[in-house]
Length: 264
Image (cartoon, rainbow, N blue to C red; front, side, top):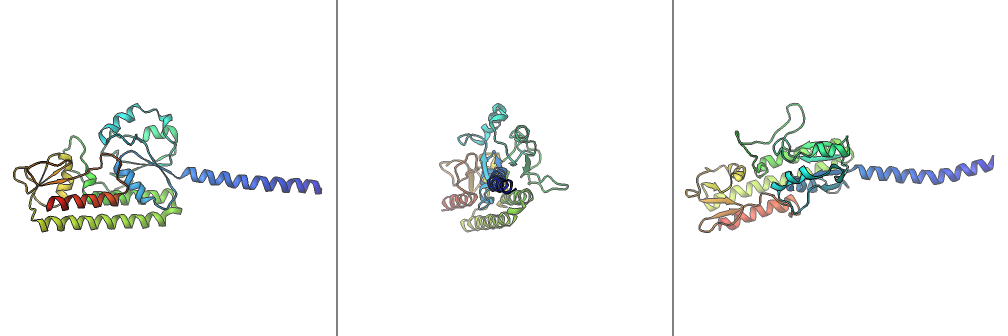
């Protein structure tokens, strides 16, 4: 009897720590979140700070946004990680269609569309009607705020134990976005900029957010462009076509700094 109890004790002592390690390992592996666009990756990085959620940027980091759809058409689903959730823009950028391939790796993967809340009457980003190709709608900071809120809300439902941290990060992000929007408005006013033009239609969301007339380049007080243009006051904008920024806060500061340079 004593020998049996001793064997049971040894078995109990050996098995319980092993089970605990297994459960911990499973828990850590479950906290995985993917994205496939620079803006969604930055948003995920800022929102999940301090949560322990592991982030996966699926395309090669060297690829610009316009080449990511072709990469997804070629990638073998077996090469992708088995994720618990993925941040997408599929309701607008339909060519970056992550969910079907990721579902092959984990049938339980949860898609979170940041452009269209997946809920009855869910919120949706604002877009101009009749667009043949999607624009950079996240340049409208109102849309970016909505994207942050959608992501935080759904991630909190997937990982309720991280809800407090996620909401804290969300509030910080929203505050940074709102402050940047106010500062951009103030800079335009101080510089006497009363009209804007764009050299790429996909930059229009930022121009419209500024609430000044959008005119042709030869009539505009300032041109929005992704590169410097000689002979005209130019606000050089990084529309997040590539990875490289460390955080959304850094990108917002760069957006503000580039307008300060243009307004001088």
